Image (cartoon, chains in turn brown, green):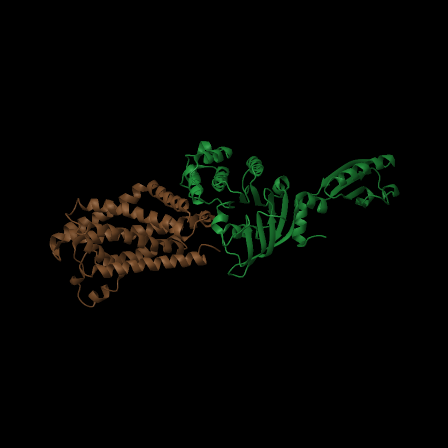
Length: 253
Length: 314
């Protein structure tokens, strides 16, 4: 294990983040603030409560998840795609670093970046709604787990992509729609059939409800199921990345 | 060769498309030498370097570096190797010193600012250490690539076309720096299109074409074996035959007997000596001449000849 190599990647990625900190932080904060204004303030006045939770507070975990998923995925995918695009990947491939160091560096930094932004979003949310966190320790753990899971996913995406368009397609056409349809702004109980059943095939639905449970103590699915689904996703991503490194797919000729 | 620093045996690489980039290459590199790998575009030079450095997976063959299997003990091997690729490839928005620090850490070295300062100063980059790489000139960017490769003080350094696209002054400057590295004990393998570069710097030269090593030898030995001298003597009056007193020299007549042509020598100075003797013989024999043009064959002539014929001369 080359711990210095892993730290070098991690540090380099964070330096890149802080070079563009203004855009990296302002954009998600502004977007999330608009969601709170539109959905929390405008629609919230009509909906009042869901499962005994004020609507504004109800959407906090969903919006946090929306940010976590998009930031983790894009941070990690850009992190590994840019050296592939510029050719700087040669240095990584010729260095004494393997799967473990690469993941700790790239995925760790991507997750850290999205956690920083998630923290800022939570603070921003306080400006718009009153919310409490029912299980703060679980909430922190769950947020870290989701950030790591989607940073792993983003890493795979960054290796799979052969152009900037592909890099954008998955977050834009799959992740964001699934997040919106996964109960960010509503409870599954509010849907009629067959959409209620269809929604249960959406993996993001379990993530959002898992996080919602840590915030409100109530959710549409048992926390155990949400946690199992998330851990399963992490395991799958790590297996895919191990396969990529073993075969050199899209990395080594 | 005893205890080579790099020992490549029967190395082959065929890409998925079916292109064979390397076909059974055997190569041993001595510790402390500068080895120049010459070859036209697509000859397999970069593929060979890529296979040793871990950028691609060989189809067959073995690579040992520092006595260790480069495939199995890749961590130990890679931390002792530096690579300067042909293309300028880095995060253009990074600061010079940050980029070099990153490379140092990536290769497992503890942060050593003194070493980084030494490297940056030796490459005349110290004053630019806080500049963003994209603000630097092309030559400076290439120096940053070298600084990154030297950041972990490698024992074996690969330079893939190190002076491609740089001006003559900078090229000479880089040759001096490469010479300094050799003096410090670093083994250097360089690929180049500039034959002059190999002629100037290399201890040994390898010629590769179509994935096969055509020749590996000491530069001096290659020049001795394949080098030659050509002298063209413009005679004042045309002659019908080569004067018998000059029969010992490899001479021919051209230009209707007005030009006496000497083609001989072996790249070790023998040709020059024989041309001097020939001139004295012409004076002694009273054969008047108006001028002499002499030309030594260069490594480039030998290289072109080898690549065109595709075989090693006996």
